[in-house]
Amino acid sequence: MKLTLLVPSAAAVAFLTATLFAATTLAQPAPAAQEEGAPGGPPHHYPAPKNLKVLPKDTNGEQIRKIMHGWAGSLGVHCDTCHQQDPHNIGPDGKPRLDFPSDAKQEKLTARRMYKMVQGINSEYVSKLKTQEGDAAKPVTCGTCHRGHLDPEPYVIPPEHRPAGAPMPGN
Image (cartoon, rainbow, N blue to C red; front, side, top):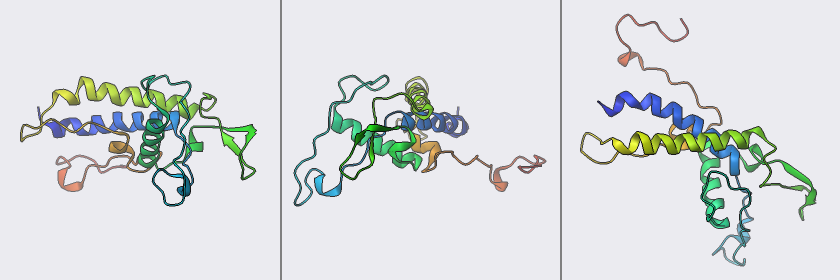
């Protein structure tokens, strides 16, 4: 079976997974001066994550931050898409900090489902595929479908690849 026949299905699955995952555990970015290795700033402390349900329990705070920033970029969102504000935890700027462990937002729950879906697609399907060159197929990611958008654009078959007599989209 050709890998190209599976791409639209894998893309749909990746889209759903990316949405769930990004909504689940996005972390707030640290100010640039506190980034590790940033000139003039001390290394940033990343607290141990709480309430991990789909990521490995031994994932540390720095790893979570990198994962969440990757998801946020793949979806074109910010941390507050999945994480609600905590009105009882005010930051130095006078604004409420985000409550990362909370499961109050549906987007976080969706992100978890999406992440599990992507993991399933990669382990059950993509890992068993080879490219035409015989290499392992690339895994599906949030960005496979989302491409920087919270809601991926629908795929439209290019006119040159549309079967003869097939209706145009929207007809």
